[in-house]
Image 1 (tube, rainbow, N blue to C red):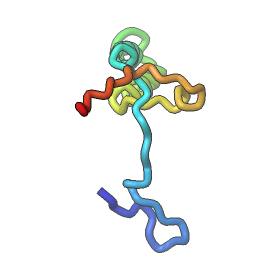
Image 2 (image 1 turned 30 degrees about the vertical axis):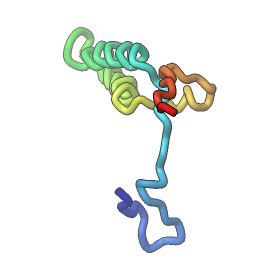
Image 3 (image 1 turned 180 degrees about the vertical axis):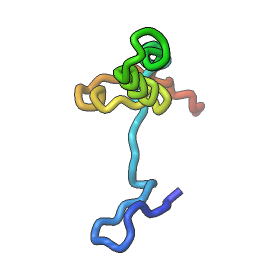
Length: 87
């Protein structure tokens, strides 16, 4: 998948150049999903304020499995896989 994002300019970047490593484990993603759904419910139930839209951020990071602040702080909650290659 190498569709061009910007054409006709000096800056050229493709989707294949945008890479990130997942840095969130299963428990972390589950907690973020629950927290995000709780915040998002504030739009429909309870005080019915737009502050609940902030719940989209934890849900999105849980779906993607990548958290930029974790990258900046050097945190990785994802389990390391053991090398299963046989010799």
